[in-house]
Length: 366
Ligand code: UGA
Image (cartoon, rainbow, N blue to C red; front, side, top):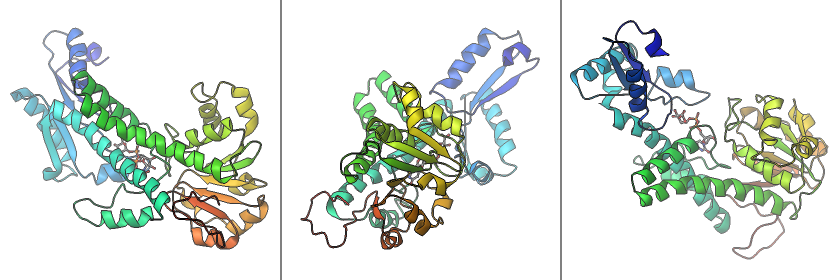
């Protein structure tokens, strides 16, 4: 489209997350459709914004990355784009590289972030098996300034449209470059995430006396993280899928995700072969208190702030007994919930029911 309408030389800036070598493909397409005398410079300027904090990330970006051709014209194009950013980003935080480095750095940044989550999530399994507390471990590890505290929040698993896609991209590139060991290394970050999602789902079923058939379960949060209505790759889909396959009835509440989106996600052919039975088993609510009425358990999948301040006494009273809470984001006050009467399970910390003696290493069944 650019080639069709361009009347003069153009700098084309590629910002989206795309397979590596995107700039090269753009260049081929432009050149194939080029009008005589028009010159194109392609720059890679990857996006590091996160959903829910996009404006903040744009205004206070840690860094801006611009990759271009290593030619005099390429350098000029890089300078022009850099000039735009210099209006609000300090020049020392604007990195200029060749196109390949820029494109690979985008994949690498997401791969590193996801790797941290998979690392802490892998340790959450060790914590549950031994009695260590993953929050304490994350704090102790994160206070080492060489490691840092961010992205060490153990969870039901990471979601979103980018981490998985970018790592799979990296794996694909490594395979294409005949680097199978490197491909396997990064693939493990995804595998660990899948393991975490299914481990959490299995824990729910085991805790509910190994069957959820015909039990009603409330799902708190469906988005892949708070402050967004985005459900792409959300761990809630895996959790709901597993519970539905085991015959549970789900009462779902999310403050932002549209009901149609939730139904679309859960009736997708990748999730179920019988969309009609899923529709019968799922009810979407516009209020958390109606979502818990008469249910056996609450499964918290998204860390929405409002879940912290709900009236859990009121919630407990309206639920079936024994009432369970599975906190997949570690945001609730577990001690207080236990005082109210809930059986609490979370990620990376083992809760024993008082008065129940178990031998070291046995699986707790609250
Ligand atoms: C991510 C990156 O953070 C951005 O820098 C990048 O620009 C973006 O992908 C992209 O490539 O477009 P985003 O997917 O919006 O941003 O959200 P994150 O805040 O990174 O969270 C991703 C997932 O990891 C969420 O499911 C979140 O709940 C989970 N997470 C995050 C954890 O489970 N633990 C943590 O400690 C942090």
